[in-house]
Image (cartoon, rainbow, N blue to C red; front, side, top):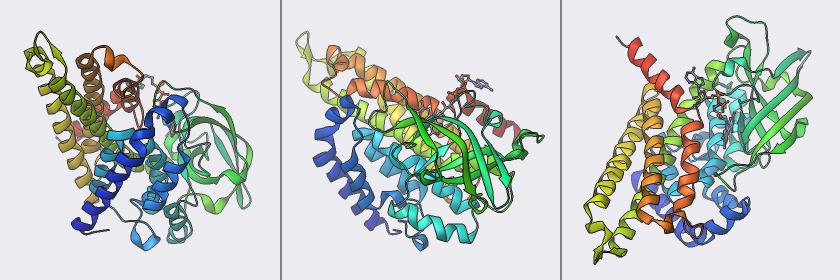
Length: 380
Ligand SMILES: Cc1cc2nc3c(=O)[nH]c(=O)nc-3n(C[C@H](O)[C@H](O)[C@H](O)COP(=O)(O)OP(=O)(O)OC[C@H]3O[C@@H](n4cnc5c(N)ncnc54)[C@H](O)[C@@H]3O)c2cc1C
């Protein structure tokens, strides 16, 4: 989908679906923490499981810029839905970027159709930020790898049916990343969901612990041709993930702002709408600036990604600024709404619970600051 008119129409169709079919059900699904099966099926029918997969492999071939605007649009209504496609598309991006042509042809059409629903298996009980400390091992045995270990916090790990799994193929390697590889692992290979994880937000989408007990994976499922590239490959795909998370932040910030503007016009105290009090105006102005500046940074990062550049700096800045903005806007929206903001009958408290995840996932914001500073220092 390359033409702007076609893309605009596509976004309009998604917006209409969100307003008519998703919004009326969000509170029910959110509070029951229920997987939105019918909504996910509709996303599959829209082609969103192939959003960023090239058309040649059956996807929509959307640019990161177009994809980020769709993620923002969905997140304004229910951020959890974007979680269903984010790590799936990161897995597809890993195969697109680093896989062999044979692997692209074998896997990408199945990701694009939604037949295969992927996730990203990086984090473990003892490590998240320090990925080089993972302990899951894959031992080569003839024409297969035998995988053992535990992965934690894996989104789509239960409802999806495959994973890009980060493993140590050489646990003794120095530097540590030289012994890391990515494998395409299918649920039918035999890994187990050992635990569903409870969360304060990001409801509906599943996040689980996975256990690998001598799971046999064909050796031709190593992404690329040689082992030892997994860390480098993961860092590359995380750029797309960070743009997605930043776009979610823009969606959340904007939803919090829109609701606050609306409320500020209709809620009266001391004989006038609260929007006429300067204390509220200051908050609204800050919220609008945060949402608008975040959007610009997301656009800049997406454009760099689309130009085929490494964009650690741009994606890191977008992720850091947009997600902190989401947290601040969610907090300000709650203050502006008073007790109604605290109520589970409305949406504001959900923004307040969802926003912190954005500051943690796809590399914490502390790690983003380190990435940004390193990129700046390397540039001198
Ligand atoms: C709802 C949810 C869904 C998730 N989905 C996935 C998924 O699909 N796949 C997956 O692999 N993972 C997933 N994660 C895991 C997520 O990526 C990690 O939580 C994240 O990378 C941080 O790792 P950690 O929680 O182990 O924190 P740690 O790495 O233990 O960090 C703890 C604290 O120390 C700080 N810190 C760590 N190192 C440094 C440093 N060098 N300098 C300064 N500060 C530092 C961190 O910023 C943080 O504040 C998910 C997490 C959540 C909550």
